Amino acid sequence: MKTLTVIIPCFNEEGIIEECYTRLKAVLDTLGPGDGMLFINDGSTDRTAQRLDAMAQSDPSVSVIHFSRNFGHQAAVTAGIHHCTTDLAIIMDADLQDPPELIPQIIAKQQAENANGVYCIRRSRVGESKFKLWTSKKFYRTFNRISEMEFPLDTGDFRLIDSLIMQEFRRFKERGKYVRGLISWVGFKQVPFYYERDSRRGGESKYPVKKMLSLASTALVYFSKKPLQAATGLGFSAVLIGIILAVWYVFGKIFGYTQAESGWTSIMITILFFGGIQLLTIGVLGQYIGVLFDEVKGRPEYIIEKMVNGEPKTSDSQK
Ligand code: UDP
Ligand code: MG
Image 1 (cartoon, rainbow, N blue to C red):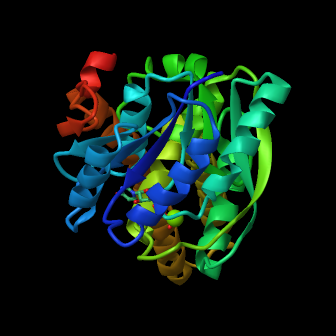
Image 2: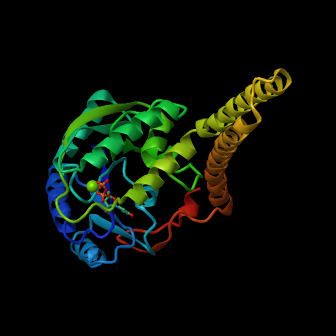
Image 3: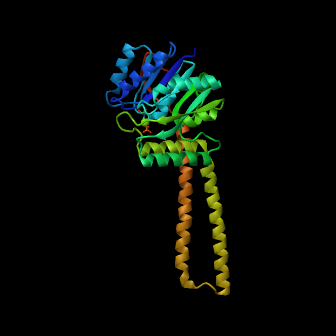
């Protein structure tokens, strides 16, 4: 019987963390011994930390990593994978949108197919705004079109991974982690599992538009060079248009078919058009340079203040 750790990142989830524990505990009790939960408290400012510590005190199968501040969902999941010591891990949100009761079926799927990973595909998502559904649908499709490999659509971080995938994941040196992309990138045998996503059990979404954009930008910049190539493409088209215009005006001057007073409009259009393209491409370059800057600094991805029921590792000791 394989042992399992459920990895749960939490940021200000005081209202639902206990229900999350109770429901998970009920499921884990039906599975083998040696299974546990690993909560990552991502710098919560409410009573999440105290609630998690109380759980860990009364239940040795609960471990808690406390970050020194909020490092973000992806850093929290990364720390969970770095610290997992069991054969299998399931990554799950604390808000119970991904029902813990599905865990036995996910494990059964992994065993039946002899797979290294099972990624859960949301067939439906209740209780989410039209905006979120639309942006996420568009994002996954655009991401697939411009990234350098195929990724399963409509999957979040809710998934099962085995020790082989975890071992390879720990070798990633990049600081900006788009976890679901990296796990697909690793390869091996990963199979889909379809499920209906519930609505949040309480509290607010911890993914405001700003965080969503930042995740999307990490995903795109780390998984694709196409925006840079598109910048080159735009540059080429601009040069082509420039040459055509130049030829048109020079011939116009010689053969007298352009009038002097029509100059203002054409100059303005050219300046705006080329200026726009230049700023756009500089912006694209800026995104990549910003990422290079972060990577070159090589700061740790997260800092652990303390770990309850376990030995903390620094994010660098994994490298
Ligand atoms: N989360 C986190 N750090 C953050 C933001 C979110 O650890 O900075 C956790 C959060 O507590 C939850 C999970 O990541 O367990 C997913 O967040 P949420 O449910 O708010 O995202 P949504 O489902 O709205 O996309
Ligand atoms: Mg959620």
